[in-house]
Length: 440
Ligand SMILES: Nc1nc2c(ncn2[C@@H]2O[C@H](COP(=O)(O)OP(=O)(O)OP(=O)(O)O)[C@@H](O)[C@H]2O)c(=O)[nH]1
Ligand SMILES: [Mg+2]
Image (cartoon, rainbow, N blue to C red; front, side):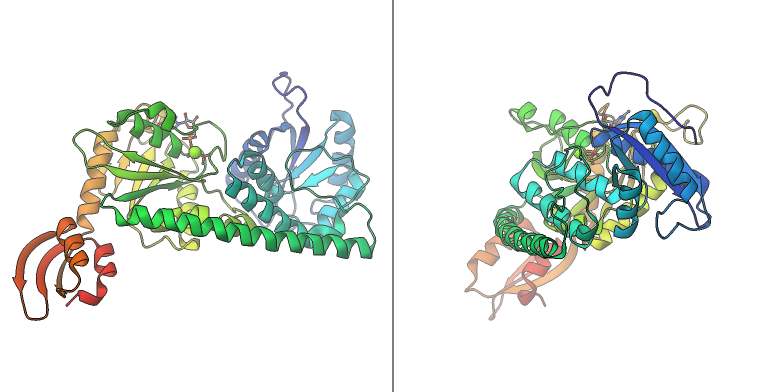
């Protein structure tokens, strides 16, 4: 891998970072290279200048300093040569390794998890997202408290980085208790917000309109797809309803729900939320559970995939794993192979005309609004296919249920029996669950 120095002044005043990667355990070389370019993108997303990347291959990481001692020396020289402000490691380091490296290098050292936490801290806008990030940062920090040093003049960037000022056991204990107290406070406030969110969601759930969630790897084009759908919709003030789309990892951190109403298609609610990444830190997954779980309550997921990324298969695996982790793996999925306009000449897919449909997949381009109608039709067919045949007997005392069911399901037979109205119909699984007590 080349050592790259950026000579443009694109990053003036931006703190300089040296990126460090270790290839060990016979890691696949290409996968390692891609993970290092992802680290570069993450560094930029954190408003840091990736001034140089250095790599090393070892049979296994050094338990004290992660990389070998010779490489640490090399790093030390590079820091003074480049006047670097921060060192970023591509893997997760142990608290001891972080502490040792900071001591030897006398420079701030963070690992991939720490970097992702910083990005989230910078991007979080809503009160909920900010509290979730703070919670994740504190949880991440607790086991590392003892290692934090004070002498370093740390660059800012992110609210949560506390340094352990006075060292000493007493101070440490005080810090620990303060952090635990703050965590409890945050948990309480977050639960209150979650309750509010549940109420809003319950309102949405009770409406007839299907709920669809955009999920997928960060930078795949989820927000672009939401905006393209808005553009094509019959609604007012669509410009104000658009969300940020940007070539940057973790551009979106908050959840937005919009009504989409394409001419000639049935309307639906579409939610856009935070994207996934390989090895999303568990502290973040836990803290963002309620934001991520927006997907759990959807009737259908649109998994957006950047088809132009050579690593898209890994991205699909990561997304499926994350969906399992948040309990959303049972929801039907449409695979949206996006950015198909970028598929290059000469590749195995270059003859493909877009939009191209195959079973539960569509190859399209959100940016160029190619394939929106075809995707809408696929959505309708998928939702329709999800409907099941069912029979209900609804007691005469529950008029509300009868009204709800008959207005939303396709009723084929109605009979008035002694115990209630007997209906034979086709409806969504959700409705069957809701009126489980009346099914026969
Ligand atoms: N060429 C091309 N670029 C696209 C397409 N769709 C999205 N992009 C670009 O890809 C970048 C990322 O798009 P976003 O919509 O912000 O991606 P996202 O999935 O919302 O990403 P996060 O919010 O960071 O998780 C932007 O620069 C878009 O302009 C497409 O179909 N073709
Ligand atoms: Mg987005």
